[in-house]
Length: 345
Length: 259
Image (cartoon, rainbow over all chains, first blue to last red; front, side):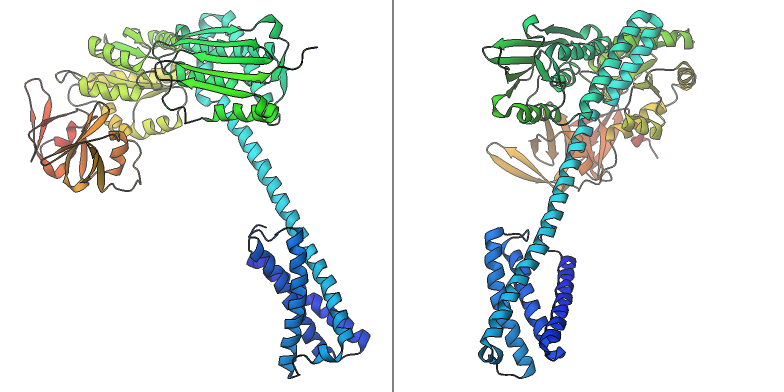
């Protein structure tokens, strides 16, 4: 319920007015005063206090919640000012001396003031906490919506129709000419789809699997791309045996490999080499994806893939991990991920 | 009918598959070459002069559409243009545009029955060829121009002249001509260079005021003086107020049929 909302204000006025009426009924019943003047004073004082509190908090903060301490001060000030103003207005309307009741009945005035203070504080707490709850709920819904949107975009980027339909067209061609290879490619497409869907279902951090699994999934994808691109794509995957069992976030490298194909090698008529390598550098695991394709001009324009990799690294390792990226026209593209190695026993 | 064809497809298995399907659907067709990128498609087509072109849309170096546009301009004037068939795996925009312009296209994977229909169409087009430009190519023009845009009309250009920036009113411009990385802006007495590509400029120009006459040339209609045909059969256009002549692409030549 961010900012000022006329409908909310109208509802608060109504609630305050009903409350004031109930209070006036109670006072006239207990003390035996006339109901009409009691109702008038009750409404005037109550509404003045309400206006002070509800108006004041929007003046102090555009969101309507200035914080606990300013709110407490506001309630006290609004109650005293509202009480004095409401009382004076009532006296004016009924033609009584302006400070009549305060002078005549100091005890009653203090009592009323204390009661107003308690009721004002309660009202302020009640309305504010309801709004805080609503705001928190909205924020949570927004976060959820953004998360599912990000997952959908990831899935769309990986299950790109152009890639899928071309792969299917290639498979259809292979079935006629080379059935054993067609079966192998179909199995790899199966693995690729399963892994992509699984990764899109898990949370932002994604599931974990071993580095050898990561390389196996990249091998599936790159075999499919090799089938499509033929001799234009040459692939080198380099994973030292000692690093193979290390855990890594599932499909962390996939966007980098897709970028290398889509922006580096596919636009190049002569094609080129794509190299994915893992190596240990002290206490750091270094994963690199490099190609000698067309390269790109502006490193400033960071696409969805790179952003997504960066966000996952940030979520998992904070400042301990980083992504380096270099590219120049005609010189290919190099991406390097540097991750802290888990402590070796 | 002993026709010849050129296939441009960057995925080797798909090129082979198309060739195999074509051998079944049109046994008389001779495939002269199969190339893997748009640039080679243009070179080989100009060298081999096939009767039919099968062009993949997404190719390295030059897209199928741009390759076709280049061919339309560079094809020898005395020869009829080849029949045109686009091939695409999935591109909703392209498919809608092809439908709208009655351009022939094949969806990958190519299916025998659909290919049979395309072959029949191409054969009919080749028989009727010679009288006028094939309808395929006229449709291509609309495709290259892009969707009609609601982009605001440009009223001024900002061209850098040395260290200064010169304002040029669109009303003074007689012609735009693409030159390497720049676009030449020609007014009555002066010439300016701007970096905005012609493709981005076009949607911001009033199509009633400026006509595209070539993939690299746009001229002010009111300034057109005459269009003449040289010995090689190329159409050339002259503008009032400019000494240069501009080549008219055959994609746009039908605008200048005498009334």
